[in-house]
Length: 170
Length: 323
Image 1 (tube, chains in turn brown, purple):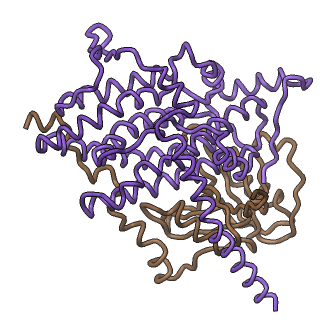
Image 2: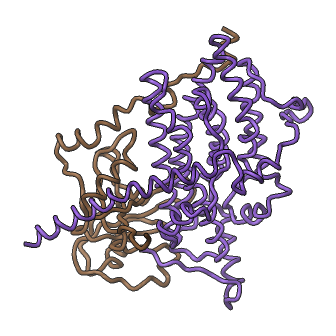
Image 3: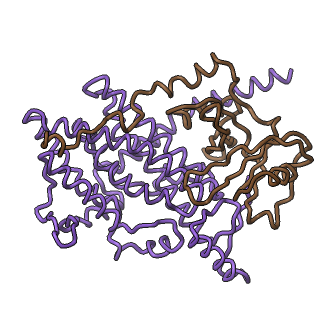
């Protein structure tokens, strides 16, 4: 019965066009296309999304600022890497934000390039070639993300409650 | 993807690293998966996060039963969205636990084999539609108290999952409150129904915060390492102070003859909680324990063909692409 766990894919979501894509979590799936569909169910229920990508979890090279003193050996071919950084400790809602795309010899090299531009507490690099994402076409965006936007019961303010006290005082 | 660096008390540099680790937590820094952490910190987190994930997963059952019987289309849509959220919350949490090097499979197996615990509250049945409202308002109300505290957790992935979950739980809380208030000012029959639901869910809800601080062995360490930032009794108190006045104003009475307001402290005081029942339910003797577990096992078994079909489809496509 066991020993059948599907591979894990990291999910990258861009809420709106003007915001950077962010690492939001992961899903298990049989292949990238399936992962994208599952990611949509898990991470795009509401309220908005502009684009979604997935890549195999093991393709991500990760290192924390603490770990940079003694980084894990970088394995990875030369090419274009997407580099993500977690830039704050204080706020809870801090995902890895996309810092940029870098041509590099290996993932650690890509992160070192990014470090010239940003500070952060944790860094991730993934080969661009392994990313699988939604097409940036209007009709694709519509069919993928409109249902989340139209989900009626999404905002707390929708209920505008109506506390028992207000009822009594009215 | 991230190599875990775990320290054991017998390591020569353990004391030094522990001090560094505790200083980071004291500064309010988040611990990320690649950072050094004590083995016990990791163990406690896996225990808490996976239990929490299981609770979301089992929590779909009591309310899911009412989806086909919701009184209106609007209520049905709300409930569908809510149950779908619980599934998503389970996923976020399993993911957070996976960053600690435990596999999804191990966690799911622990749930299905009955080895792992989940929140006691889901071992009670939902007898009427009013239960759905009370669960939204009170059970999710208590959950939010607990979860906003956990959103401050020192472990980054858990705290991030909790922030996301809290945002969605507030919607659950509001829809429950709205439904209950509507019934509370409805016909005598509706009022009786909602009072009955309150009577049945009141004590289990208070127990959700966990045993009293004096009986909670893990709490001091969890507080010290910033896994929890409040104690069980603190959370219970916050819940009471927020919900009791609103329930009373709605004309509903919690089934606790000793419930009173303490003018001096400004807090609501509850009577003795029936802990015997709590321990009985935790140990598998609750009204729905067997039923809930069976339902999850059955869902896993009956979903097997879907998993197999997905795998076959993917394999065939890869083979075709290779040709």
